[in-house]
Image (cartoon, rainbow, N blue to C red; front, side, top):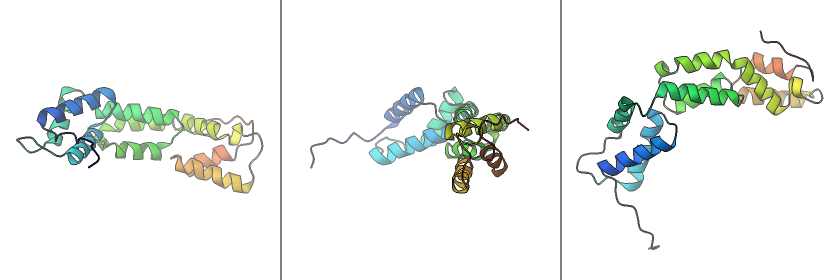
Length: 173
């Protein structure tokens, strides 16, 4: 025995309090809250009189307006777009957060309209294309395109930015 006391198993009140603290502290989606609650029940065990109902608790928080998946999707897609990530990477992040397709409409529209700006931010951050100090050799060019693709941009956009000459002003199509 290490002398460490284990926390007591969760009950309805402790689970509700834990969920409320989590929602108050972090911007979260229904799916992320549900995963958090399930993980905590698994870690600490369940000691409540009724069976654990993390789904019901997450749904209640949605009904109360504590969680807004559509708002979370818009916020998350905007933040990732400002960091220079493309549509594929943003879509994966929203899928991982458990955002349903119906809640993604506004976020997807925002991502599509900001695709050029996100690619420009990424090119600036990676110092490629117009933001490079010198033209890239073929190996560096391939690495830069691969980085664009990993960031979620499509191949045509990646090539356009990477193949631009240093200092060249690119116009959005």
